[in-house]
Image (cartoon, rainbow, N blue to C red; front, side, top):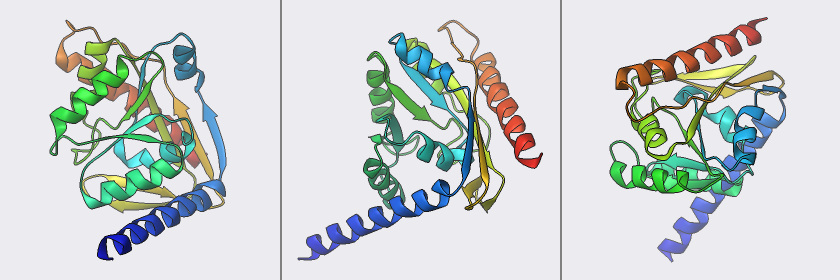
Length: 217
């Protein structure tokens, strides 16, 4: 009986989370540019990593819902709730993080990216920062599989911000959400590791500055 109660509670939480996101983000106007960067690669059968800073995650979560792309989720309770909400809106998940079952999750990422036309979303500064400093996981996965990293940034004209190790943004209703995808990045296995990190950071920072400029204008 207790397990059944927990299952009902988890199901209700996921249902509420799904509809909360739809209300918050569905009551915004969206302006999206650059989707062709990842769509063109998928049409050619290439695997893709879409990468954005952790604080901008929710806009991506809603925008790309229903495409059955892969996201990453840890194994703790909050991550479990995120995964259950995501599954209800059309996401698939690989479980683990840099601290929890990280090697298992990385192997799963590599295996997925070896399949033609698959997409994995990676926030390179997650799950615990430091903010806007890429960890090497996404780059290593791209190097091992030949997948492109397509950078992305998103911001809303109206939002709440929550500060922890980064600033996490949640869109308020009745605003405009700006989303930009950037040119694909490729990383060879012989490229200097710091240069790889610098290139990814520069691309994400440039897109972030541009969407922030657009929502201020």
